[in-house]
Image (cartoon, rainbow, N blue to C red; front, top):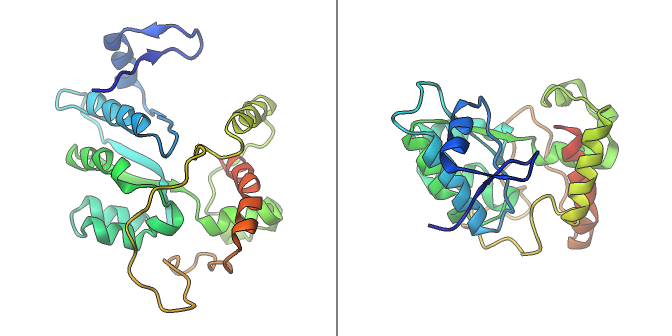
Length: 231
C-alpha cells in the first residue's frame, strides 16, 4: 500500500498505528479531508474506513457522509445503498458530472466498502443553487424554506473564521480542489437542449441560468466563503 502516518495535530507527533486506531474507533465522528484529485488522499480515506469499520468493531450504525453529494439527492444514495439502482443510475440521478465532476473512480472503493459494511450513505453538501445564492446575496436573502435546509449556524466564532481564512489562503480559495482540473466524469443521460441538468427535487430552489467560464471562476472564492458560513 501507499505510505501514510497518523499525526496528532495538536502536538505534531506521529502516533503508532494501534494507538491511533484505538482513538479513531472510539470516536463518534471522524472527519477525513482530501484534495479532490489526489489519489493518495483517497487511498488513505479507504484505509481509515477499512481499519475502523471491521467485523470486530463495536456494534453501531455506521454512516459515510460525503460532501460530494448534495442533500436534496439523499434519496438517490439511499436507493444505491439498498441495491435498488446501479452505479450509472446513481451518477446520473445525483448529477455527479455537473455537481461534483471529479473522477468517480477515486471514490468508488470507499463507497463500495461502506455499502458492504453495511453503512448508510449520507449526502452532506447543501444544494449548489443554495450555495450560489448565499455567495451572491448573503444569508439574509434566504427564504424561510431555504434557511430550513441549512444546519444550525454559528457565525461569531472568530478563531474558526481565522482558521478558515488561513486554510483558504493556502489553497488559493480552491476549497480542496487543488490546481488540477477535474478528471473526466461519466457522461450523464442526455438532456434536451435548454433543459437544466439534474434538476432538484420539487420544493428546492430552481437551477440558475448558466454562467460563463469567467463568471464561474470569479464566483469560486465567494462560494468557498459561503460554504464556510453554512458549516
